[in-house]
Image 1: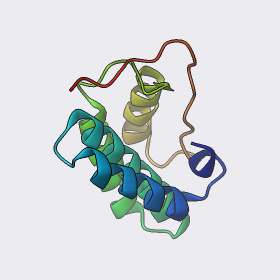
Image 2: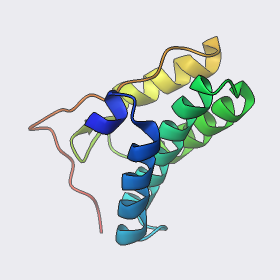
Image 3: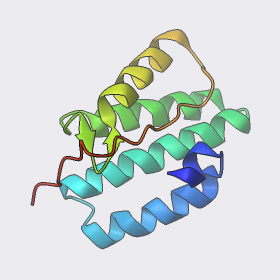
Image 4: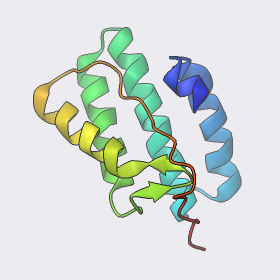
Length: 110
C-alpha cells in the first residue's frame, strides 16, 4: 500500500501482479489484486499523459472492486469505490489514495 500511496505505481503494479498470480487469477483475492493493478496503472497513465488509457483502467478497477466487501484485506473499499465513481464522473482527478482500516478486515472468502 505504501508503494501505491507514495506514487511508486510501477513497482506497486509489479508487487500486486506477483500476489495476483500467487492467489489465483480467477479467485476473489485475484479480482482484488487485479483491481489494484489496474488502479496503479491508471495513475501511471495519468502522469504519462494518456487520459484515455487512464479512464479505461479506472473503469476496469471499479468493475473488479464491485461485489467485494466494503473493507477487504484491511483496505477501505467503500471509500475507494466512491472515489473511483467520482473520478469517472468528474474527469481526471488527483491520484486516489488507499486507506488502511485496521480492525475491520474482511477475510477473503475461499
